[in-house]
Length: 417
Image (cartoon, rainbow, N blue to C red; front, side, top):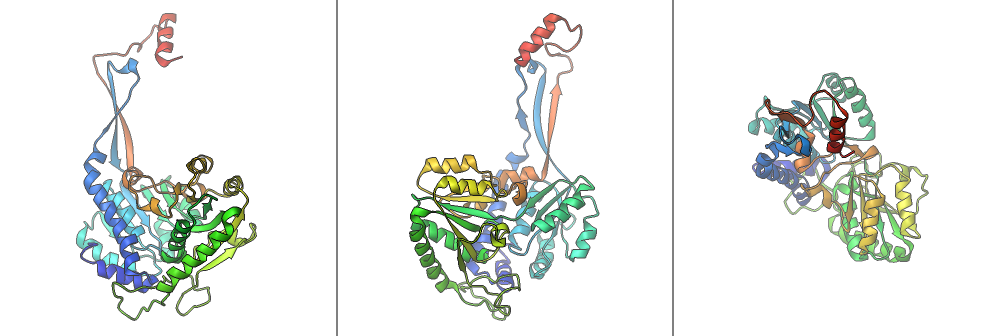
């Protein structure tokens, strides 16, 4: 489906959000393809029951294993900012685990919902996968029904609605939520590399409208001036190449370059929905922009005197979906891993964690609940059932009374007490 209708998908993403062919292909379509390729290659191994250890004193008669089975009916809510990727990526994992799935794409804009509703039944069994076009009011009715799993990528406000509804049925949920994610610039960092990677991830990919974009930067005072100059240089260099207003009335070409649109109409250029990238220096830590996720092309930069101050600042705030650390001091990098508790930590890059099928992707605390990608997606949409088999004609060392002092001593020794 992705191969045969690639142009239709990226044309829709261009018209809806101004995404270039490169961004639509590299970020959205290719990441779904990667998920498909992973499961095609590894599904048999993932489905195979896994042996489990038993204590030595039970091994004469007992064997244990873990069997993965489908949860049953899964509901996937996808957002507007990655309307193809975040509808299909969890769908791939859910059907791989054997579930029937209802995908509820975003209603704003409705274009991707319509194209998925048209195409998915041509490639997947409509009795197992359906696309639901529903308004916000209709979704409220939908949540009155019991599902076996709900996967939702949304804002904290929607999180509360989902959690309240699912509590009535004890439905398990995986939530991908906001990410007020910091990037830390150590005095030993490669400034040129750091600024180019931060600028590209913050301003070029969906114009900062992504939960894994760097939300604010904590810069060591020793390199603050050089960092800001290099950041501005990278920004001007990239934006001068790409800052063209997307034109919804023109059929996009594969080499079309444009800054993605801002989805929120409450900003300066309401007609074209474009906002110029902005660097905000040392905003008050109690200000709203430092309390809430920015989710746009504004990047706050704060100066710190040392890395201890940076780590304390991160720990004093809700757990982010990711912490980015730029340093050539690997001892310091390990300290960041040990002393912060985000969903993930990335050293000397931005966004690389999302494309990997080998590690779990997800938030923690206020930034999310649960994870997926690769085997972790298979496990998220599976019930991992423990199975214990004991031989009918062979007992363990101690199974029945009398519970004598000798038997108690043997049992304690078996248990390591």
